[in-house]
Structure formats: C-alpha cells, structure tokens
Image (cartoon, rainbow, N blue to C red; front, side):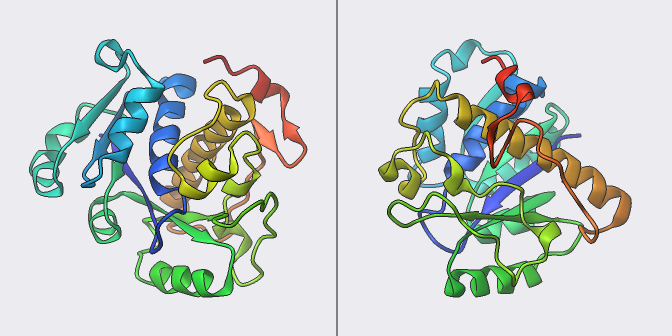
Length: 233
C-alpha cells in the first residue's frame, strides 16, 4: 500500500512543487521505488517539470504521472495506492493535509513564516507530521541557521537553500534546476527521500518525531559524501 507524501506551504515560492517532483524522481531512480506523481494544481507545474526531467516518461517502468483534479484523485486513491510504493501529491495545503499519509512543511527562514508554519503544524496530527524544511526565497542566501523556535527533530537535516547547483532565479521560484546533471542537487534529493523514509519508520514505531535523530548519508554541510558520489542517474 503506497504512502501518500505531500509537501505543503502557506506561501508561494518555497519549493513545494520542486521538492514533490525531484524527491519522487529520487525515490524511483535511487531507491527503486514504484512511484506516482499526482498533479492536481491548475498551473500543472509538476507535470511540466517531471516531463522535462524524464523525457522518456511514457516508457519508464518505475515512475508515472497523473495530471488530474483533487476530486478525481480522491475517487481513485484506494486503487492507486495498491499499485505503487509511494505517491507524491502536488496539491493545495488543505487537500494535502486531508489526503496525505506524511506531510512535510516548507517555510522561509523568517519570523513571520516560521510562526505561520508553527500554527499549521499544530493542525497536523503527530502521526502525519514528518518535519519541516526551511527554504530560501531571498536573493543569494546560501546558508540558513536552524530556527531555535523549532525542535531539532522537526527540522530536516539540510535546508533547501544549500543547493549550490541552483541558480538564484530557480532557487527562489522552486520550479527548475539550472543544470539537471548537478551532482549535489541529485544527492540532496536522494538525501531528502532517505531521511523521509527514516522519519516515517520512526513515527510508525513511536507515534511522533519526539527523539528522532538523523545522520546524513548522501550529502552534508561539507558536501557530497562517498555514498552521494556513488549514486548513478
């Protein structure tokens, strides 16, 4: 039975669609998981991005795309869950909260955004809440200090702003990658998926993230690890 994963944000430009699509590709390419990307958004950004990153999508055997409405997806969800390991859902915050098995919050690293994220977190049951990724929506922010207002186990190990292979424009808009062969970027998304799976297992065993710790496998603050360089796309 597939887990439904949803990245959500109260603000635009934090990288919701980017993380949805690229983490789904990482699950398929690097972890050999049968994966579905469900695009329910009117602008269909996820659809365009996935088709660009995997031009042979129609013949790929491990990743599929469904461009649909949230109502249609709700009607199909039981059947779809039986056919995949993971379903990555690009949807509005309300729809994502209602349908996802795991929810990851995206927030900019400023006080207003963090308070908004904390209020949103309070509405998510601990069994669904999988953590927070801080992202940059400003010019030339390459390092984000973890917020002291968020419990350490709630923050993913790497903020989105550390993706040095992203151009400023793309990093802000959260739509595309400047160089699709960028090793650091792919190692990052493999890291996000790996950490997501460990968080999921911990929540299943313990009921929440309280006490969770994670050691990066593919990329850390010093760069790509040996395991990261061993990834082949």
